[in-house]
Length: 111
Image (tube, rainbow, N blue to C red; front, side, top):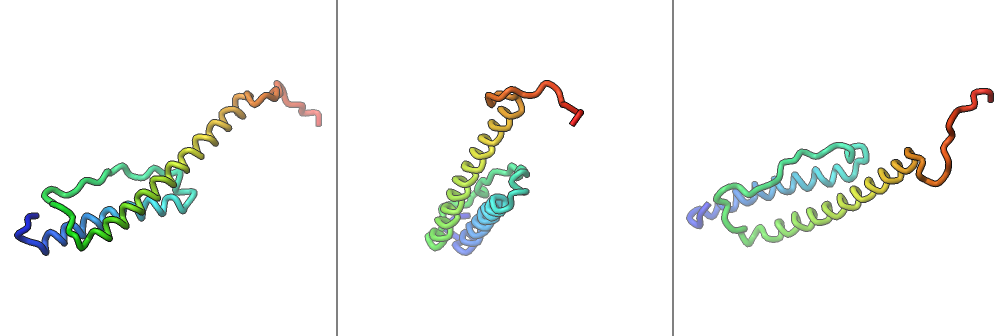
């Protein structure tokens, strides 16, 4: 996109922002649904279409909104991953019996 076709430039940037908004909406949905948190999101990093050029000034507010949503989602995902790691560490200690309490060596079936 060059400066010769401003409408094409705006359309190209609008399409690029549409894609980013879809990605952040998918991440937000993933965070809202605990069952989906167990799924891995598809690893398709965004890259700007070739020749996109600079962001049109009239799309700046929309781009800022997308960026803010991405930052919020990234923070929430980091917290979710941290919580998952803590749960896994506790589970490992319980499974290995290293919580300090001795584990039974047999099961009394007489009861």
